[in-house]
Length: 444
Ligand SMILES: Cc1cc2nc3c(=O)[nH]c(=O)nc-3n(C[C@H](O)[C@H](O)[C@H](O)COP(=O)(O)OP(=O)(O)OC[C@H]3O[C@@H](n4cnc5c(N)ncnc54)[C@H](O)[C@@H]3O)c2cc1C
Image 1: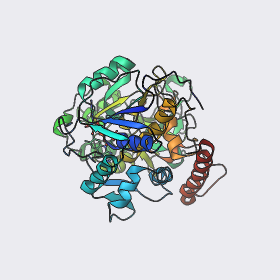
Image 2: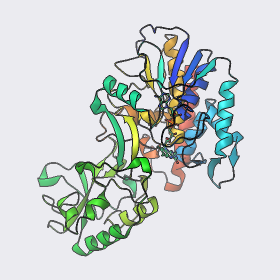
Image 3: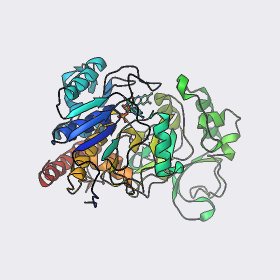
Image 4: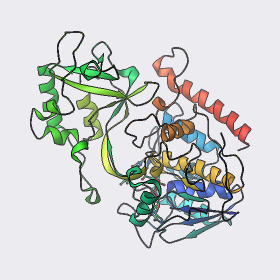
């Protein structure tokens, strides 16, 4: 796929704003393709509420980059990045600490490795200053992360339209379609207006047990800078439930207009599931944004009839997160459709997680270089983990766009019936073949 490349103002310089995971990876990718790079990083002059080290590539929370097996979606993403000579993956390999099947790192050594690699690269200059607004005529990658400083967030709001810039995630869990018990769940929209939703019907006793478990479940304590400013429209389900036993029955669990074909009656309560993608492989729990601990979410939400065996592609959360509503704004090459010199990478582009953020930096670094050189831009095939993430960012059919970890539900379905325990390997084999083919074609 290609886009038109109007001439950028400066021919041999990629400007990168933010020296986190995405910005560092982008700088590396651009420099190793022979262009000059200037990284603007506001640390140590100014720190976000979660950052504390002057080093580039700082991990703000866990020191784990999650599963390493290629049969898991995030393990596959890592393997694809390795094959594309990722700096973040090289840093992880060099600073790895034992963590079972996960890839965990010594966070100080990890960030030091990245900082040192970029410092030794003659084409990279690191400027320690905050940028208040991008110069739309320079080829620029914005990679300022979930805690983008305020002046730049305001500039992005002006650039994209305020309604396209979000400051909080209020994420409801997502489950895979294949893990649902369709013997209990029925398909219908309220008042017979189509069949867009999957409905999980409760008896009164099931609702009582669910309500009790929800009220007793443990919540994640808030960080000081995350003081909740919930909108009434997206209250956490447990906060709504705490207002009274009946509240959910008039909110997200209201059964009106729904008849369960198994009983011919309106159920006592209903949890609705809405398709997350066109293929119908993923469903979100409507109205279930939550601050419950991850283990608690799995325990409590499996009490919903039909979700007893649910496999969670994403768990719910609510935290501060600056991100753009990418579908409709970003091209599959990670530049803005309306501002082709301007690229977005990392968490702010609408992915979630360290590895996902770095991977979008990798692609933005490749494409910003090509843009500078007026070469056709590249998009990885959808069968790859990289391509699946790009698809999530640019799929305009997604309702309620929210940042997403990589997961196999974002990939095109596999052909034929493959036993569940072999599916990860099948996705990986197909993805790596497609990646190699793409790399050859694009001369990467
Ligand atoms: C509190 C918190 C905890 C998280 N924990 C995890 C976790 O455990 N595991 C996980 O996988 N993901 C986690 N994430 C999500 C996400 O993966 C990380 O935030 C990740 O670091 C995002 O990478 P990034 O490159 O997009 O942004 P960052 O790594 O945050 O990098 C952005 C950089 O831009 C700089 N910057 C910001 N504004 C400006 C400006 N105007 N000018 C110049 N520089 C600027 C910042 O100082 C920072 O160095 C967490 C997020 C938050 C907020």
